[in-house]
Amino acid sequence: MIDPGSVRKILEELLRTSRLDTVWLSHWHEDHFMHLDLFDGLPLYGSEDIEPMLSDLEIFIDAYGMGVESREDWRRYFLEKFHYRPRKIARYLKDGEIIHLDTMNVEVIGTPGHTCGHLAFYFREPQILFMGDYALNQFGPWYGDHYSDIEETIVSIDRLRKIPAKIWLTSHDAGVFEEAPEKFWDEYLNVISERERKLLNLLNEPRTFENIIDAWIIYGKPREPETEFKLIEAGYMKKHLERLIGLGSVAMDGNRYYKI
Image 1 (spheres, rainbow, N blue to C red):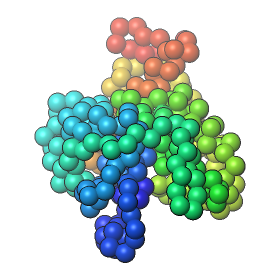
Image 2 (cartoon, helix red, strand yellow):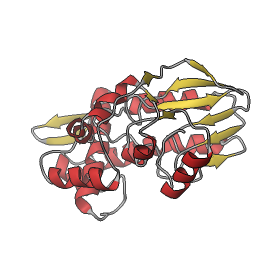
Image 3 (spheres, rainbow, N blue to C red):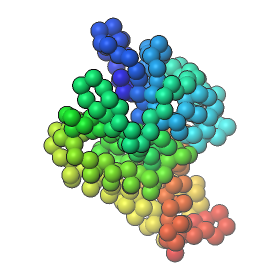
Image 4 (tube, rainbow, N blue to C red):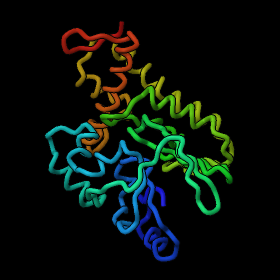
């Protein structure tokens, strides 16, 4: 079982009728472990990098970049809706490792960027690539967490693109691609460039970080609950500002950012 975050009734049926012996996690996000409590009797496999978030709710919340505001609400949210409980990984999966199953071999592919420790899985014989949250959707790549990274995201996408798969599986949106998704790779990567173009245009005039968040570059307009979506918007903008400052395209004057 990879990422038990889908329909609980279906997972319960699989648990009753299938010969499941392990659970693998592609990464630590709550929508991917939501029903992990059903499989507490099975060993859990995943990247060593995700274990801190799985083992402590406070570390988990910190990894999203959440401050003290509404922290108790977030604790309740993850405990009640996503059944969060501390867990340990029984076996660390490592980039390049080959796992030998009864009928096929699975290559573990390190794909950090979306989160630290994100993994993809390539089922070699049927040439099926499970890409986790590199979803090839119109929204574009997610890299809004504290440990997310834009450059690593780009490298991981390029790496996944080169794998000789015949079927591509993602965790969201279209989900299954049975033909080479060439244009989707390009469009997915281009979202990063488009976000930076909009941010640089905004910074033709000096802006505070609060001004930048209020521009809603990621979501296009305010979303509800606003506190949650502003947190995500801030996470993305922080990553882009760090990248553009590193590239020498943006600088700061006091508490304002401006394009060079």
